[in-house]
Length: 165
Image 1 (cartoon, rainbow, N blue to C red):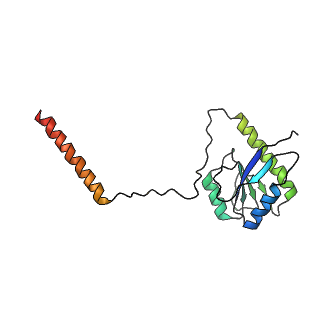
Image 2: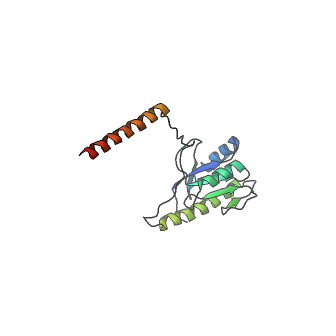
Image 3: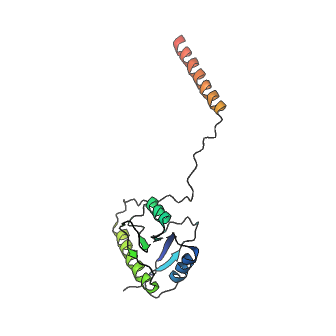
């Protein structure tokens, strides 16, 4: 096995704060071989390289569905889920020694995919905003009507000039 030093950013979804802290501490361990893993902090707008999702947390699974992760952003589910997904699953209780092997296998497949993609292939990346963008029309209705009236008046003047020639 060759030495891999790439840093892999992971977004955790649906875990309680104590379990997120455990993930951060375990994955931050420096290893001689394999990838280096780091968990993104909540609120970070950095795109993750992969997701680790609590399969027992329905809102997290719904969010995962909305994110549309592809093969370039793989997912590891932790625990059982009632629904079927094409993502690898690691059962609970988590075997912390085995998690590195599972993550390394997932990232190896991701790296292979990324190296075989052509330069023209566009990867789809989800929206990074934490909240939906508001589409507010702040135009005062009276101003909007005045602008329409002015445009109609200018149009009528233009028609009269053309008709008079």
